[in-house]
Length: 263
Image 1 (spheres, rainbow, N blue to C red):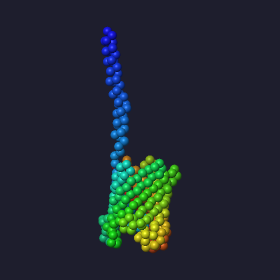
Image 2 (spheres, rainbow, N blue to C red):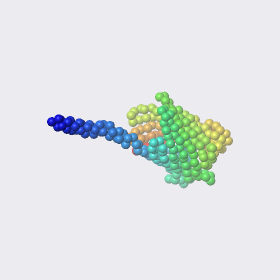
Image 3 (spheres, rainbow, N blue to C red):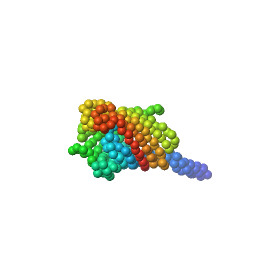
């Protein structure tokens, strides 16, 4: 009788363990395993088609004709690969439908609290550029610090191939205004400067100087989840007499629109 009681007690304990262990595993180890699996992020991708009444590079008009183009970028844990192509829409100089620039790029971006920075390597191939060398390589850095009122930003670009050491930079401010859940407006403005090498290459100036001022705005409309339409207007003006002479006028207005899809 005593042995029978011991046997029943052991069976009851075993049953309790058998019931409790799976439950504990489901609540603990299984959830932990699920969290481990879900913590691995999938790459994200964004594609964009755009139109612009002019093509602007480093505050100057690189192409005065209407252009359209595309942009594709894949990002994973801060690392990104992308390519951008720009094509003429008009038939001035018989260039309709031919790209005047295509730019593959690769880089890394990180965020530290409200501060974010992004560095990239770019290879630019300019099919219709004047001169012997129709391509170059550049390093580009962007940084910004978000505050509740306004976001200061910095952009820096350095040529490392066609004209090594030719640098252009811009500083400015921007702010987002959430009008509705599906509608966000952004305003921005900045001042650009180039060193002697950059200014000499762009418009035959032999000195380091501030060269352009830029203000603009865009309206981001979320048509549906992951799809956005963004019209924009940008205004540029030149500081230097060399820059104004190269443009034949100091003031330049640019209008455009882009359609982006995120995956």
